[in-house]
Length: 312
Image (cartoon, rainbow, N blue to C red; front, top):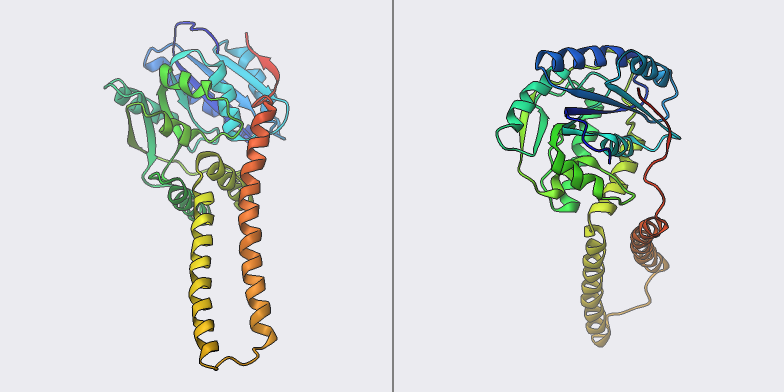
C-alpha cells in the first residue's frame, strides 16, 4: 500500500473499452475537485483494454502529475482492477467508479459531504438506472439469487460507485483471497455505512463489457466465494429424496403384502435411475466447484499483475 502523500481523495477507475470517455472523465473530475479545493489523485487501471485506453491514460499522466496509470498484464476483471487501484491509492478518502461516465463525477461532492457526517462508507444508489432492459433484468436476477444464496440483503441499484474511508479500504486491501467482488467485500467489513440517491447517466456510446455470460460466470464465482449455502442446499435435497424414497418403500411393501404388486415396466425404472443419477452428479459438481476454489486459494498466486506503472 502506498504511504500517505497528503492527498484528500483518491479516485480509482477500472478501464476496459473506455477510451472514448477517459479525457472527458478526467476533465470533469479535475473540475469538481479543484472547485472543492481538495488535493486529489486519479488512478486509471487499464485492465488490458483492447482499444487505445492505455495511450490516452499515458497522455493524461504526462499533462498532470496527479494522474497515475496502472497497466495490467492481461484482463483480470473489473474487481481485480479495483483492487490494484486500491493498493496504489494514498488518499484519506477513496472513490471507486466506472470509466464509462454513467457514474457522474458531479455526484462525488454529495457523497463526500455525507461521509463527513461520520460514515466510513457511502455508496451511490442508482434510483433510476439508465441501462438497457436486458442489462437491468440480468442484474436484478443476479442480485436476487445472490442475496438468497448468501443470506444477505442485496440491492441491484448499488454497484461500485461510492466513497470509502482510508481505514475501510485498508481492511479491503488486507483481504487477499483470489475471488473478488468489491460490493460484497465492502458490506462484509461492517463499518458504518449508508446509501445516497444519485443520478445515473446514460451510456453515450458502446456497450457494457458485462454480457450475460460474464454475469453468469461472475455470479457463480461470487456465490461460491462468499457462501456455503449451495452445499447446505444439496444436503437438504439429499434428505428430501431419502424421505420420499422411504415413504415409497413403505408403500411398495404394503402393496406387496396385499398382493397388489405386479411386474412393473421398464420406463419407470429408467426414469428413477436418471433422476437420482442427475441429483448425485449435481451434488458432486457443486462439491467439486468448492474444492477447485480451495485449490486456487492454496496456490497463492498474485491477485493481479501490473505490467507497467506510469506516473510522474
